[in-house]
Length: 119
Image 1 (cartoon, rainbow, N blue to C red):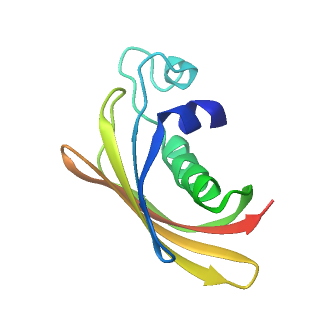
Image 2 (cartoon, helix red, strand yellow):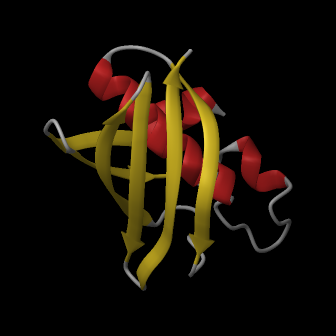
Image 3 (tube, helix red, strand yellow):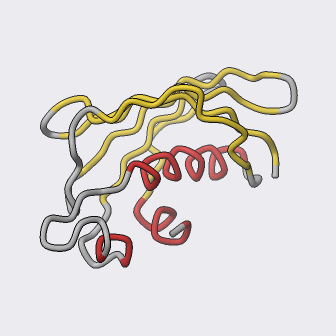
């Protein structure tokens, strides 16, 4: 799954406190075989992984997810649809707090918070 996310992800902007990325998850990805047959949706875990991978690319090191204290998935994202990922980054002792908002053509798709620590 990580390689699929990394291939789909493009970083458009980065600063000390924000990251903006875009991704398109193609219908050929194996994750769609079981989520859901006949009517595939991008799984929430793939969106969370996209935020983690964006942070790894920006910082040049691996991160593990320590916690997901808040997550709301508001609208479905379909294979082949573009998702814009806006991440507000706050440094915390030993890692980062990432507040992510994801949007697409229909509007706001998801919002969640991740606590990341170096792996």
